[in-house]
Length: 266
Ligand SMILES: C[S@@+](CC[C@H](N)C(=O)[O-])C[C@H]1O[C@@H](n2cnc3c(N)ncnc32)[C@H](O)[C@@H]1O
Figure 1 (cartoon, rainbow, N blue to C red):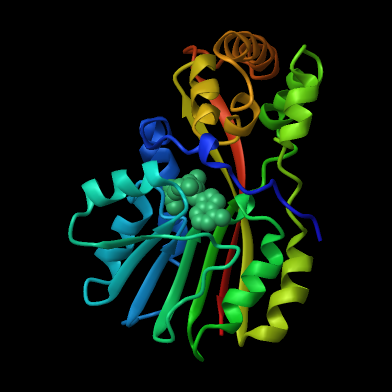
Figure 2 (cartoon, rainbow, N blue to C red):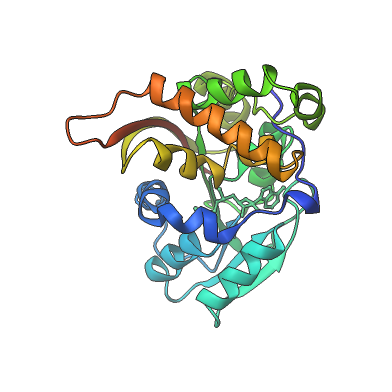
């Protein structure tokens, strides 16, 4: 199965502010994921890769009596999450090695596992650590073949920055197929549901598409560059986005965004 991008170095820390520019759109997939979680009253719930706390907030609303905890590897995201939800517990951790407490009934990972090296193995490990009836619920972007992602790689390969970016291994690998996740996870659980949803996010204009990805997939491409190179890279990328995504009649741009969902019941 495919591996994913390397673990982020501290210098590549996430920006909660940039990520939250599209909070409504980014919070729709975790709502859709949570709607399929078949639990009534879990004891402990952990939001894996909780980011700025937007997904954690959904978990608290749905399970007010549970002990809800957010975990993330980014200091900036954790700071923002603690500000947003002061009475919730947030812990620093790396999913490659992190383990849940034994009374954890729900592990919820929205838009995080695509960043975790060899994430299928990590999913299998975490699922096995859940009690019977416990749930692992995961959503990952499955968009590596969309123009917006392919164009990042194209711009990266065609400028003076090519070697630097190649060394940073910035491009995400394709996700494994749903069938691969099924073969991996089904022997470890009583039920697994795997589906795709294609969102069509409406961006104000082409610059909006670029801003969206500056909060996620573009980060590892821009992180190794100095300010001037970042600016040129972003300008070239914006021109390519304009060519690839035709503006609608009102100037807005539709960003097609396929995402993969998994709900596994131990
Ligand atoms: C795209 S954000 C998702 C935020 C939130 N869960 C949501 O639903 O919008 C991904 C988060 O995963 C975190 N992350 C990336 N790799 C991680 C790892 N190995 N362990 C823990 N968190 C990680 C990042 O710091 C970031 O906050």
